[in-house]
Image (cartoon, rainbow, N blue to C red; front, side):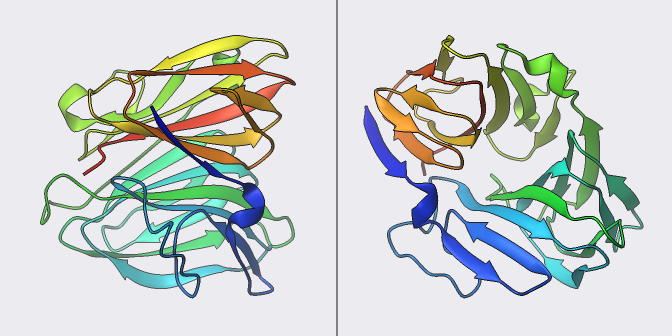
Amino acid sequence: MKTELHPASARGHTSHGWLNTYHSFSFATYFNPAHEQFGCLRVLNDDTVSGGTGFDLHPHNNMEIITIVLEGALEHRDSMGNVQVIGPGEVQVMSAGTGLNHAEYNHSKTDEVRLFQLWIFPRIKGLKPRYDQRLFPDQDIKNRLLTLVAPDSNQLEDALWIHQDAYISKINLSKDSSFEYNLKIAGNGVFLFMIEGKSTVEENQLNRRDAIAVSETESVKIKSIDDSKLMFIEVPMR
């Protein structure tokens, strides 16, 4: 088993006044040659956007973009004609494919919106752009793994899908609970991100917003110290 800790304090940080963001991997003006990506996972940003502000229209191509809203509401508009509001517990997937433009704004004029945004390299370039979103109620993941995103080759009834052999899952562990994450595809790695709480992962303690990159294994053992919310990002390591 190969492991690498990613302490929350080691993340890149950018504040634009209206946007307060932390980067697990090199992004925009933040560059860390040791943390440019983890396998096919290119971006994991932890964003807080002030009320009445947001990201103006900008382009993307050949990237699977996943947005997970934690608090508040995010308004999405894109060149495919989609106009949606993403609320707490909702997940959005956008396959940029051959190219599209989109804008993201805080739907509230006063309250902040907090979200994670992930970028995953697709298996194939030049695909047709697509958009989807779904609500995943938080009560559905108490001591039970819930898959939010799965590969297009293994579309699950209750999950969104992307053009990559990747899975994104969440679990809420009660204090003093144990859980073993079994990787779904041989050769994949998993980036475990501690959303809230405190747990040990293969004897490494993770606190709020810490992460650990794990590869060359078939499973990972977790033991919660306090009530904990974890996100698992399983990706090919190529």
